[in-house]
Length: 168
Image 1 (cartoon, one colour):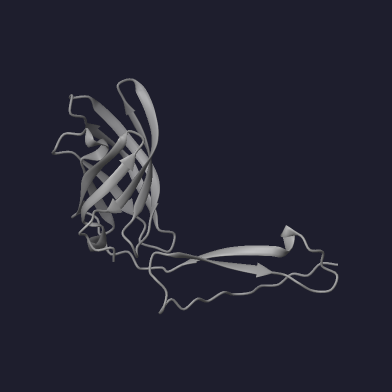
Image 2 (cartoon, helix red, strand yellow):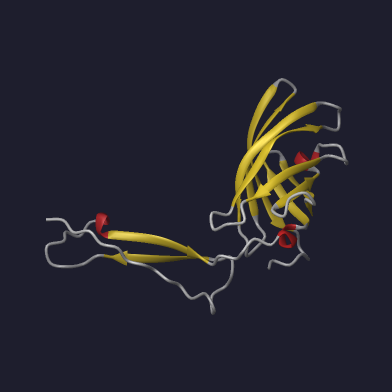
């Protein structure tokens, strides 16, 4: 015997903190069901906030495998969902901006199109990647591929709004 069905979970976040992930655990019980972990379902819920380019403009604390430093994010004037990141890797020339495109939808994904970027020592590297963001808190995380100096670096970069910046 098997049964199939659908159910919907609607959460009202009026009294919940934005940016916090809440966990809903469902335990299926009934006659004929064995008590196993297969009878448990865990659903993570978090509030969704529409993408607002202005919420991702300002100073961010960035942590990557090499350490921590600050980056400056500005609005990309050519793309309503674009953000330009300055001081990438804490080792790029001051006039270099990494272009990122935020999806603006419920998937909250980031695309970093392949682009050239000049390092402080004059080396021209190529950067591309993906990521995700939280439209409520302004947090974003990127997985980047950097080709420079004859090597490839695959890294995760964590970006948190700097203290003093609104956490939305």
